[in-house]
Image (cartoon, rainbow, N blue to C red; front, side):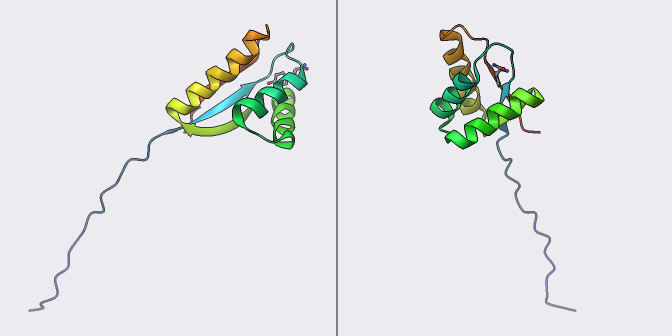
Length: 99
Ligand code: TYC
């Protein structure tokens, strides 16, 4: 008889909190420069990153800006959308689960 025990260990699985994408949606009215300003101010993107995100949303209809925990994603999406609304623009950011 062998003394060697064969143990089957079950590694506890810790559920990773779901992350949310903040998505920028295109519209026909918000000036490009203003979209860039919002991306820089609210999301702290560089000028170059902001330009790329804005152009992608402009040409493809939408672009992922960042991925964050649910609360942070929803707060940022609202903050950025409100920024546009204050100036009378229909600029829209939404938060959606990653997968
Ligand atoms: N389409 C806008 C324009 O031509 C610019 C724009 C880009 C608006 C991206 C929203 O998410 C956006 N003035």
